[in-house]
Structures are given as structure tokens and as C-alpha cells.
Length: 274
Image (cartoon, rainbow, N blue to C red; front, side, top):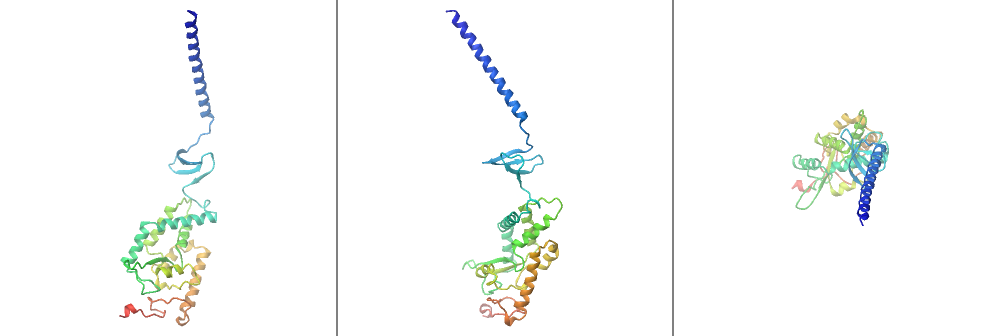
């Protein structure tokens, strides 16, 4: 009977020793795995499905695939990233959305209506913005350059800078600053006329006298970044100006401007004549 406790004691010692060996082997394997694993200089900050965002040594953030060591999507863009026309188009539209949603953009529209008194439609002068009747007068970019054109011109300026690293925030900030400096040509239009601007065949011709903003100052400062399309827009506007306003009796517009009384035939405004 004295043999049994001794046997149990030996088995307990063997079990402890075996567990110790297993622990040593596990630690050894983990150390080897860590040593053999390729080092990644980026520290993972957040992950989502198979995409992770990582912070590099210089403090910038990069988005990459979880299983990839070589592919990443940088936050800042350069001329190589925007070489694809589809990617470039998406980037410009993203800047447009950021500009339109900005509080500074909405404040600029309020400035035009409140301080500059631009509350009437530039085509139908008897239509005025009125909160009580819910009549809206909206700001339209043009008639020469749209907001998309302005963003693309500012983007081209940044892309020509050496070692350019750009993002939607930087481009949107400069576009908003151009509005602040009054270098962006805009015109106030009622809803029906504003919607018609999307269809060139139905849209009225807008004279420079009906617009707000120093378009000549913008061209002087940014002309070197114009694409052939932008130059063609200026030429087409000049041709349409002579066609529509060269002879006011043969104007081809379906709308008749009411505000301007230069070389445009004026339409009497009943409200003002009273």
C-alpha cells in the first residue's frame, strides 16, 4: 500500500515537468514566428472587414487591404492617382459636394441676398425670394464656368505644383476662398430658370451684366490652368453673345431679361411701374 502514494507522487512530478516542456515549446514557436514574420512599419489603428487604416512613422494615415503588404490607398492624392479620368471625375464631384455642404458656401449665398440685395431672378425680374410665399431664388454658377469647371481648374493648379499632395479639403478651401474674393461668376435665378440651365436648348442666354463676380479677374489669375474645354467655353460664350445680343430684335431666347437695360431690350415690370 505504501507503493501507491509514491507512484502518484512520481506521476504528479512527471505531469508538471511535461507541462513545463510544452510551455517552453509554445514560447519558442511564438518567438520564432515573431522573428520570421515580416515587419510592418505601419501601426494598425482601425480595421473594417478586410480593410485596415494604418498610421505610418511620419504621422500620416493610409488605408490598405488587411492581407496585402504592397497595396494601399493614400489619403492625399497626386498626379498619378488622378491620371485616370474616372477617378479624376469622382474627385472633382467630391470637392463639389464638400463645397456645397460647407457653412461658408451657405453664408456666401446669404451675403449675396442680404448685403448685396440680390434677391430677384436675373431673368424674371418680378420674381423675388420670399420666405412667406416660399418663392426661391437660387445661385447658379455661370454662364461661362460651372462649379465643376472651377474645381477642375483649381485642381489643375495644384497638380502642377512640385511634389503635390492634395485632398478634397484643400481644393474645396481654395474654391470657397475664390467665392470670398468675388472671383467666381454667379447669377441669381428662380427655380424654373435654374432647372432650364441644364438643357442648353431651353436655357436663356445670360449676359455678363446679369451676373455677379469678377470673371475677368478669375481668367487673369487662372488662365494658365485652363484646358482646351475651358477655352472653348469662353469662345462659345462670345459667339453666343454676338448672336443673342448683337441685335436685340432677333434674340433667340425664350426668356426675356428684365433687369439689365443696356443693349438688351427691356421688358416692363408691372410691380416697379406702380
